[in-house]
Amino acid sequence: MSEESTNVYEAPEAELTQANTSGNKPILNFERFSAWGVFFLSLITLGIYALYWLVSRANKANALAKHQVNQNLIYGYVAIYVINFVLAFTDISEVLSAVASIISLIVGLVFIFSLRTSLKELINEGSNEPVHLSGILTFFFYAIYFQYKINEAIDNQK
Image (cartoon, rainbow, N blue to C red; front, side, top):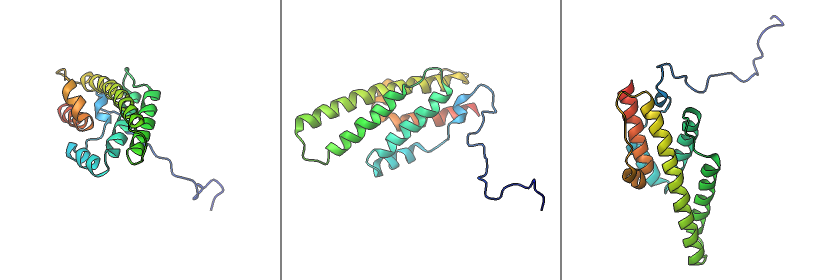
């Protein structure tokens, strides 16, 4: 055994992100996942998966897009979401619960529409045809609709 042999106890090194090898198509860096999967996982986990989905896609979009979602907005929404979720299961005054819900709604809408702008930029960057993300569908079906549009863009740009 030579002295220059590799350390067998050393952690392996791996490229954890795939490089975009298809030119100027940043949307291809996103994973294709069923919109139905997003729907059912969100339903089963009482909306927690939708929150995870939003945060993970916002972080990925921030790494790729020029228009970035503010990190304070992301973590603020997560904190308010958790507070609102906990308040739903406690005997706290209805006024405080309503205020937390309204704050959660407002911050959530700002976060979702900010992410919509980033995703629209990423989808249209490598696309031959401009794609429009509906504001109404974003409002009602945010994570499911975004995943559907990401899948559609991946299929069109491959």
